[in-house]
Length: 271
Image (cartoon, rainbow, N blue to C red):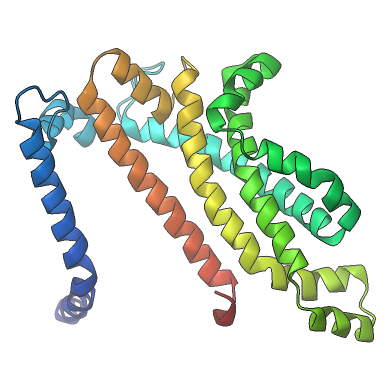
């Protein structure tokens, strides 16, 4: 039985080699160039070897918990992901709802579009002071910053998707005299889903960026953003670099997760 699994694994590996070799070579070249630059006189950024030497405890013991904010990277990332999950879910619900409202109502679209276009250009960091002033606590302020950053691509893409419903679909709905519920479930939602998922995929990346920005300036909370800022304050540049690598990996996995969900839900012809 094990021989069968071994043959399957080898066959799978051979199929994946063309996809794995180019990025592996590119990463190796990047690491070599980075290491060489770190050895140049006056270099202030440590190379990959130095980063591993300085952070091997964080790499191999990510689950330690000494209380307070002194926790391993697993708990730091988990705390940030929990904040992202809460605010992203709220942004998805509100964004899709408002997007459908704006897309189906021309008066609402004309009234709200200038406000949406104005607010969506505000950077995440700019929301931090007003959120702290209004909410008075770090945790709800961080949640608000993620929410207000993530909602715009969802809202705008949903509204665009609703307005792009083919006229033939609307004509069929009129002929069949579909009620609002049937029209929503059978016409509007399926036609707008590709646009909605585009907004959701953009929003998950923005939400992850926003939590990092929010946590950097919100002291005293467990999270990867505050971990970076605290490491910088302590001149632990290697820890900052390690955290940046973890942030990039988590961001990539979040995007892949959304792409996988999209593939499960959307028909082949709509991907």
